[in-house]
Length: 79
Image (cartoon, rainbow, N blue to C red; front, side, top):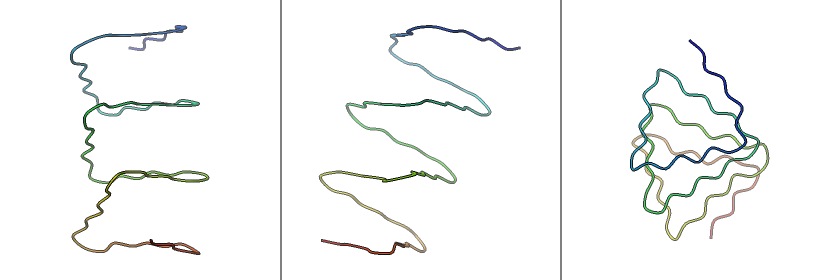
């Protein structure tokens, strides 16, 4: 079964939204997500790809790995 819809604006309000699916695909021209407390992703494999710049900003940042941690670039600036 397929449901298709064309909506100008959709604004659902709920205490909990739960999605269970074999696969989820979302395609956007732009996307913004604001999380006020915390966000967590659990995955067997996680990949982010940016065509230009990937920027992570935080008061503190921690990267932990059990095996290899690799930083690869033409120039690496620390400090």
